Image 1: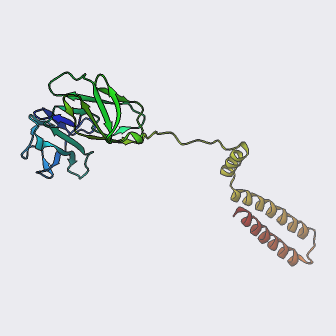
Image 2: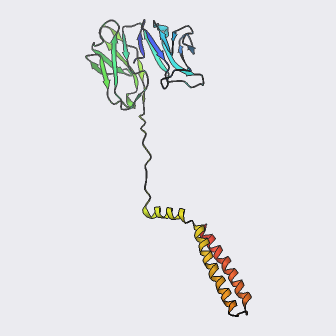
Length: 246
């Protein structure tokens, strides 16, 4: 819920993925140590969590989870202050359209004191209860935020990241026109090759019957011519329908 802490706060960190933390290691980079894991001079391992029972100024740094296979989680920047004011703001990136609440909090007094809020060093509001809600955030709301409570001091700055809101929509479906749909059905049920074969068989039957009929009537003269004419006709028809089928 916050990336800022008072010195002496208790903090528990954990790596989570689909309700399972097996195979993940919590690491950090600070001004004194690089890529050290929980239990290696800082923090205490408790199951899948890493507990920092008393936050110190030198615990400020970048924290992340790392798996054995190599992938790492989002990195979060945690800040420990010795002052009396912190700003509670989202640690992880927020999505466009969401509401974001900022809380200016003191260490020893109630957290409903009037506070002034700033973004990138520019005044953005004065809230009597110390709470500020940014409604329907957009990418323009991304930036460095801090707050100030009179007579108590100013908080450290924290960066708020805003990410695009990805919406999953099914691809549009289009219904082919009836004529095209009928063509597809006929093309599947009656391929062009089948039509060509059927027509060729019909012409073959007609030509053979014609040639046989002429021979049965005794027209032996020019019989070779008729046979050649039949063969050439079949070849011609076959070529034509092969061209059509292509």
